[in-house]
Image (cartoon, rainbow, N blue to C red; front, side):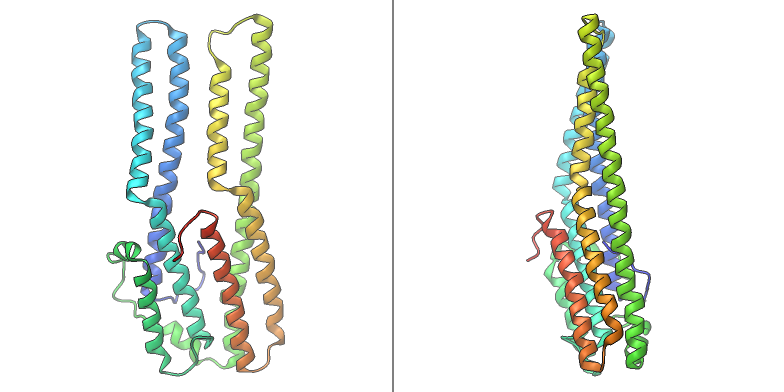
Length: 299
């Protein structure tokens, strides 16, 4: 979900983040190919009706192959659980990030005591065990050369309070605010592009209907082709939930930005730890809502 700028996370994060990106790409490509095969099958079907000759047999064969291909892709995506693996791996990555920042900043359930190192290791073990399917995928991507508690993490814990909080504001809060802002803008622009694509297709369908009404007929059922393409565009936009995510990410960016403004007035270790706890709860809540929008079980 969130591509970090700071790169001092444990190996478990590196592996889960890479796995989440991999399964996301595979899932989205399966969706693209499935919708594309249906659209192409519709075009081929119209071409077969227009040909009305022996060549139409080859076209109908193409239609059958495309339809079967879309069916196979659907079952492969479902059978492999690509979407669930994507979300499970992302959930592990986000949980590790939250635990890492809490540990470095000495926020609950951690402090700055050396005894917390064992507690942090147990926390990562709990995160990994909570999602056994994802853990199987991560096994081959874990880098044994990266320790559980990395040098950058230890260096951050050793900073003075003011330096540690400045580091947190810059590398965590500002990073998250920038990410949510960029994603909100990206989804807003994407929603606008797909909206106008549907509008153009609808206008073309209206024009085709008028031409048919005036001329009496057309050699090709253009309206069927256009409506199928429009349905594919709507299905893709619905799947990406661009409008919904644009609003949600914009709200998250505003909330994180408000918290960022409060960082300057902190006084003392206890207040700083409470502030970090509040920020991490806010970020974790947004990830929980992100999963809930897709009906993903977080238990």
